[in-house]
Amino acid sequence: MSPYSPHLQSQRLTSPLLSRDFILLVAGQGISLFGNLMLRFAMAMWVLDETGSATVFASILAISVVPTIILSPFGGVLADRMNRRTIMVALDAISAALVLASALVFATIGFSLVAIGTMQVLLAILGAFETPTVQAALPQMFREHGQSTLRKAMAVVNQVQQLGSLLPSFLGGVLYSLTGIQPMMTIAIVSFAGAATLECFIRLAAPDRGTEELPTPLEDLKAGIRFLIKDRPNVFALLLFAAGLNFVIIGNAAVGFPYIIRTVLGFDATVYGVADGLVGVSGVIGAFVAGFFAAKLTMRKFPLSMVALALSLLPQGLVFLLPVSAWMKLIVLVGFTFGTMIASCFSNLIALPTIQLNTPDAMTGKVMAMVAAISMCAQPLGQMAYGWAFDHMPVAAVLLISAGLLGLGALVSVRLAQRFAD
Image (cartoon, rainbow, N blue to C red):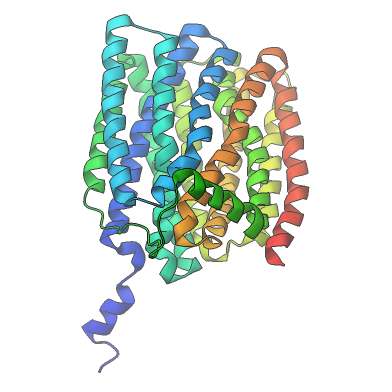
């Protein structure tokens, strides 16, 4: 047969990343994320405008994370028992219905911290079941193709997620300033419903658990914990490290970035939306650059990403010690947050596939759920701590202390990388 025959050319051009199911999965997750981020942006602007308090804003964020921490392990148990496609479809459909009901409540009673907190908690409960399901679906699709393909698939998901985060930031500020919160909630409803429709067409079998009788959910959860602690202690150490990292990164990004721009520097929602969108561009760049090196991103590269994270925060703190204009501080803040986003993309693409590749398919849902639960345990504490810090300390002090903590994390990550290499 000729080396230029159509059959061989077709084989060479065929890639697991071009499969129908993966494209549908990525598209559904991208649309769902777009709606989620549009809603999150609207809620953040609304709460800050009505209260002007970083502590109140941080408290709502922290409260909404608690259900995810508590319920994520049970979401992982469900993901290892049921068809993961069915779970994704159901959760996005329920999210659409929940936001619709919340929009009707807000239209009737207006601004209400209780109503906002309730909606965020219910969405967090749904997210507790969706995140481990999606993270378990990827290795189910690509495990047989090897770690290089799985890392590339994760890179594609990261790229789509970063692209999907751009429009909410750019459009969110303009829409919120012009029309208020209701149209943004409508966009979220349509996005969740559209994602559920696409996910209906994914072909994904139920997890293979062999012929063994299913244990009770609690027994299944205990088995996952034993597996993680006794059989994969290196993975468990990585999870604890991720918890400390989330304390700093998520606490500063979720509370500090909007609070500094809106309250400390005094810019309006449109400026914040553009700034957030520009940071999103850096996330896209980071996702594509990291994806280009995906096959080579082993744990040996993890300390380098941590050093980059620490260095990206240092100038942000120093500029607030200088007598420069608010616009100059904004430029430095946004510019060096680019580095934070790019370094985070590399860190995620190193850590998550490492965990997935060290876990069998029948345990992936539970382990990835515990990844989410353990790493997120620090988020409420981080958000509350940063809310308090920004209300009571100079911005420069908060940012410089954060840079120092990440510098210590870089030293710890060297030993962590060595444990995976041994």
